[in-house]
Length: 592
Image (cartoon, rainbow, N blue to C red; front, top):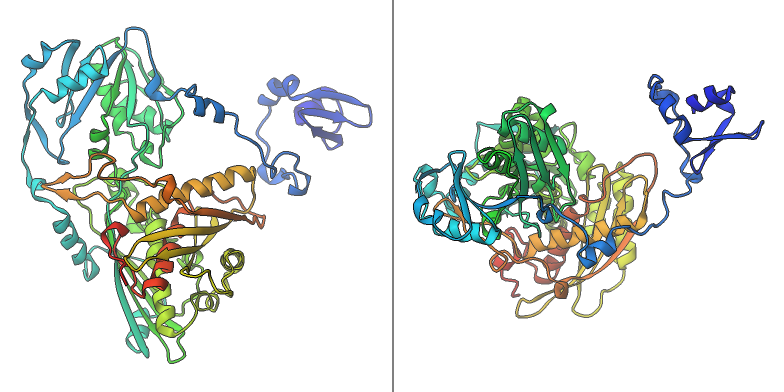
């Protein structure tokens, strides 16, 4: 606008803009962004406090449904993903990293494999992986299977799910290595002196991202340039990984980004870029496409952290909550990915999904005495960001415990929550929205029970109400979910609804079926036969209430994951009378 004002020689205040055309009404003259862009680029950046954003009531495009432009290409297979990249002279590669994290390569039969059809190279990637490079990926993978790799054994070879559980249990009562995330009043004293006390320990397993497109990356390295073709959630991170692995400065590295065939946080970690560049560096000037097999992708994930949480609370003689304690024992993603950010534990607290300045902001409840603690318990299995990160576990632990407290107090779960939410109107609004839409105050259909949950994450307020059926034989059918979100403003309502529905599929799949277990230090689940996904036949009816209250911008893709599971678990609790403390549900008997 300033550049246009200088070009038209009029005061900037007299200009208006609509549909990319800048108009001076008094003279009737116009110009376009294209004509003033170069001049605008030379002007100093204006002070943001002098810029007034357009009032939402004046929006012409934002706030209205709009269809995606890439849907047809995805449906017909025309959309290109990183795994589709083909370059002149390109070779394909298959990798096997140490099945036990921390182990190293001891030996392999290179001579036998190099004689196999199509095999060009056998190389190491770091100290822990072996890669076969061939004309096609199938040839490379067949060569890899024939390598007869031997690994150096180490202390992690004895780790099992049982030993990890014992390690986590130590954290529930530990005195050392514990961070205080939030403290209000004296929770321990309040609980100790309460008329009624409750305690529950919840468990959430390691979980894989299980992206439809396995990890892959094409790399080409020469003496003075490194190029990478990759699907990534962090372009800067991919560039840094390429530079680090190639030994070249970032200015001599290029990253070409492609659509993700599923990311969910996994493609924010850059191990697969590092490996591809390490391989390509050993075959200078030749583009190499490195693709993880499904089994390798599942074994070498960056998993959603395993965790235990001890919830303790006290109720007074009126059934009101007087004290709440939450002790989490879990690995730290940041301790693995960015240890320098663990200053005084503050970032660890933040990435557990709880606001270090006060968890009430996320919980949505006013509790007179509150204590939230984290006992960091890092195992040899690398943790990573998983869609929704730790808000998923935190919401399950808190919201399921809220239903246990409501039952102990002899109160309706909705009313029990409402009494603590007077100072949290946005939390209360989304909770009321799902309760009203599902008909909480009316009897459910025969054989149906209801559950409810709310939370806040990524700047958005979310809630879910569920209707489920549990047969006498313990078979679960989720009939209906109602989800609400207040994300402040909405650009494309259709996309908000799509993200909510997708997040439900991801969150329910994790709660119902998915876990990664350990035996002899190795991840046991290597494919979809042992790590099942949510199927269409099991997917419930989804209803959404999008209710932007304005004044802020929250996230959409991650927040609603965290409330779908606890709402379903609470509905099951209403049906069976037995609270669920262990996930996934496939390991729990629902027989009444």
